[in-house]
Image: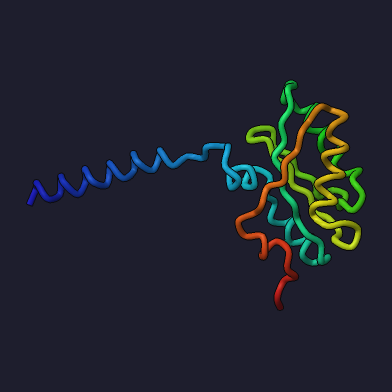
Amino acid sequence: MKAAAWLRAAIASAGMLAAGAALACGHCVEDRIAAVYDHASVQRALAARHQVAYFAWDGAMARDEALRRKLVSLAETVPGVDKGSVRVSMEPAAIAVSFDPQRGDRAAIGAALQKKMKALSVETVPLEAPAAPLLTSAPRS
């Protein structure tokens, strides 16, 4: 009986150790989106019948708070982007914005964002949210 208890404890310990290997890599789409996901912001966007778009970004510069503020400021000047909705993560490098689809679709918002970010030598790439339909539909009552 003691051997069976020891075996169960060993298996449980191995499972806990293996769980540590499942840490976020920071490079996959899901990790980047999770870094900038803000549930309250998504809910506000949905209530206004707006959409949320996610972008990866990259550039050869110091990734500090001053840069984060510049990225937020530039993203908020993109026509159609909701003021106060911009979320920026430095690591993994990602940006989230909510926007009014009447003022531009996801591609247009992405192109305008890319154009603005070039001023800082930052490149952006759209990220496709795994659950995009949930982020673009109106809430159900």
